[in-house]
Length: 232
Image (cartoon, rainbow, N blue to C red):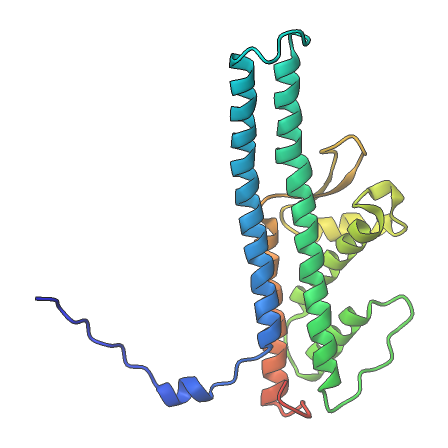
């Protein structure tokens, strides 16, 4: 006879009526994390497949007539592609998607505020300015998270405009401070192009969660404090 587990006590009325804040943004940010996880795992699988393929060709004698170290060359090339080049591009893409999602959601939040945002100071990122303004006017304490986002934006800009290469970035003097603030980020020489923005595996996970917490709670606070002209 099958035992029937007791159903947990759920307040269905509260569940149905509880607001869900920044729902579109939550979907976006969830997709960024899923993309990152899927891509990293897929690269690992493809790397193993590539090494197995090289081994099969070597054992079948397909490399006869090539230099004696041809197999080692292929393995080293595969290691660079699957351990450095591909993962770095994936993490770059995830960082761009993350920061863009935050910017998009903040624009929508600003449009729904009852009070106008102060004019953006010259040279100031408009999203950072809006976040700081909202954080201050709602009496919140998200200054550290906003600083993290600002650091991510500096790195994002270097990646978007200069492929992450330090020497080519107009504002490269901003990179060391941004790097020092973020865990799992560095200026390194993983490839022959020189010093570049490097992102370790799983380093973005922390900041994806941080930005989700920041944006959702800004929407929530603005709604609860009646700073919104409509339910956003």
